[in-house]
Length: 108
Image (cartoon, rainbow, N blue to C red; front, top):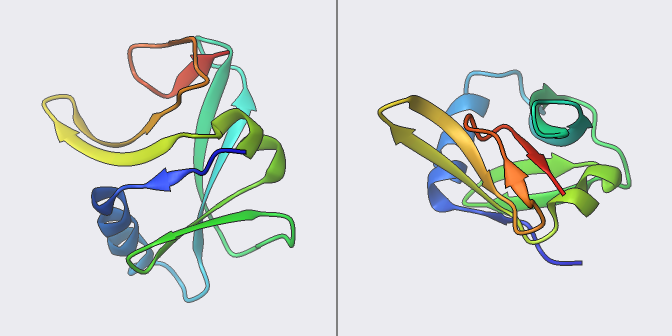
């Protein structure tokens, strides 16, 4: 399975967000059915880390992904962008065949 990459910008923003959360909190990214393109990404703050979760770390930032979601995200790059539309995490997913305009849902 291909590695999921966290960019330096994403790591910096995750560290900023987690600095305001209770100790032991982690950013969980998951893939859910639904959204305008079939699947959607969910970003949650979690204090529960399961033994089978995939852990992605960079520059002190930690992201966890459940094993079901990771198969839909293999080879993805998680970035943080600040553009005219606003600030958001962006996932560049090589498995996605289409995505919506907002970038939070995709199809395979």
